Amino acid sequence: MKRWGAWILLVGGAVIWLLHTVRIKLRQTPQGIPGPGAVELPDGTFTFRLDPAAFRAELPQLQSYRCRELIPGDGVCTGPPGPPLLLLAVKSHPESSARRATARRTWARPGVLGGYRVRAVFLVGVSPDPRHMALLGRESGLYGDVVLWDFGESHHNLSLKERCFLRWVGAHCGQADFIFKGDDDEFVNPPALVAYVRQTPDAAHVIHGYIRNHSAVMRTTKYRVSSALFPQDTYPDFPSGGGFLMPRASVPALAAASERIPVFPLDDVYLGFLALAAGLRYRHDARFRVYGVKDELCLYGEAFMVHGVSLGRAEEVWRGLYTERRCNGMGHLPS
Image 1 (spheres, one colour):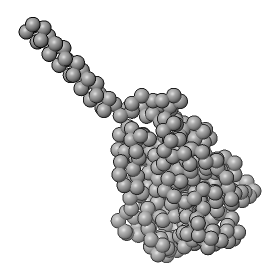
Image 2: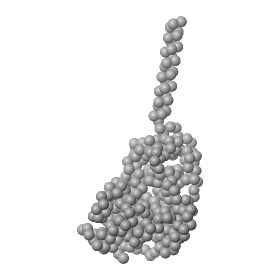
Image 3: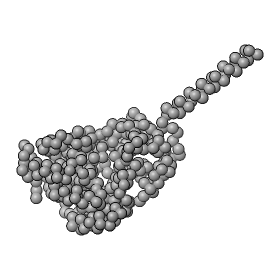
Image 4: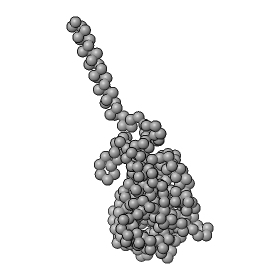
């Protein structure tokens, strides 16, 4: 009997150990088992799994939205054939009229630079404040540089701007040779961008930006993503959303990927998933100053963009670089 008792204890202990081990391995396998229809995206280091059912359950409004333009911006890229086009696509908010006005006076002013035609378009969602919407309508009438969709402005809906913009470019601005995507709270340097694309041999074949490599998934702050939506701990590489440059050839592939990839609630990560699904490559360049720069005039002249610049400082920098020419190599801009 003692031997039987010892055997039972031994077997029971083994079963408990096995169950404990299985539980540990389940906890250590963050991707779990993908549900039916899950999208798998390998990048050579990790395989990322996106389960459409989880996205529909947690963020149904992002998955069901169909792009509808209230202001189509169909005149932004019209005109007779001319120099190659650099399009500055700027995410904005209806209430940010002062930021748009500053941009139009400085870095978003249309013109021809170094053999490239430069044109800006402001990408906007809906505000509940009728005053802001009325002012936006007047801006559109004056400048013709606004695209307005009928979704509300919110942090998560920035991903809808990403998706709908890809469709808009295909329909209204397919001739844009390069597209700079950025925000309205920054200083952008189109002359430096034009010089860069002219001097970079493979510029038309990769996406350029400050590339974040396998960033950790945040479970807190406004960038939090639930483990139910995305259980893995790491994101694919992506260009930081503060500012990046993509060539015309990348747009159809990104737009096609957006038809099968669930809309992720962080716009820069979402673009990373689209680029991975489309098989696109990146080129990292620290001159995309998405984290700011030491506040010295000539450093702005070397940067492609600087994030988080006040309205007054943006005007001072532009005037110092291109009107007063206080840094070597900075010339006049077209009026």
